[in-house]
Length: 264
Image (tube, rainbow, N blue to C red; front, side, top):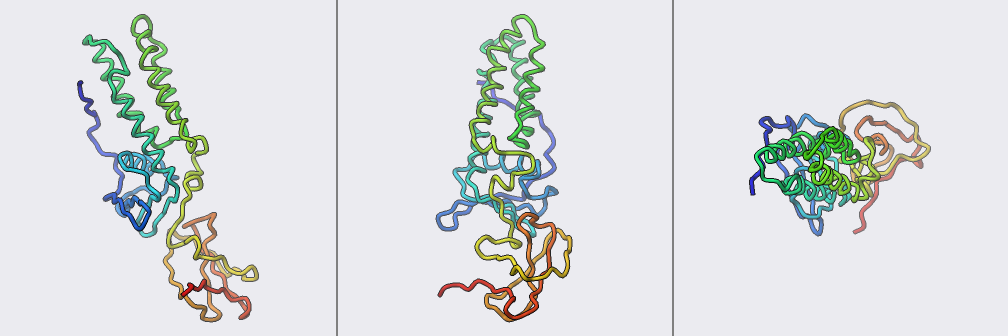
């Protein structure tokens, strides 16, 4: 069988320094080192979606996916790796020449090469960038409907069916039906450290008054394990992770914020 060779010569211009698969206890975690990447280390960024879904295509089921830089964005849903494996399976279909045509003529082979490069090189990253939107496949199909004669018949019998097969495969993952351009962090259960740690970080008391709001890219903080009396508390509203920090202060001892104590 003739192998497919990508025509791409240049890199994407973004990507992690490395990707490590770790097993802390019973969990399987993929850690992306994003320190040198110009992307924003969130699945709300199309570049990050391309990178994550492409790099995890050969990995097993993962419980967590971490995008690490000065802060870490942790995705706590297994659906990230499930979607990546789905794309991996669908790409194998896109690389199967027999699904494009059964003919071995020189013209047909040239046509298959062109369609494979168009689908794999030019379109696949668009699908990885927006799993919620199969429009790039519809655009490819629309271009082929202008053909006539034997080419049109072969196209309907093979290529258009392949595009529909890939499109149905994307829809078969229930997660893609819930995805929208701005809700990837919500669907894949994103947590940002050190700003918001589920089960440890608590909002200030309802009686606390806001002193100031400061916009910033990230903020590192430390907090002692025991209550030390009246002191300022930094709090990140979960609905705006990593965008701004509110400084709260408690005016009376009975209103002070208490740190959770560990059971001994």
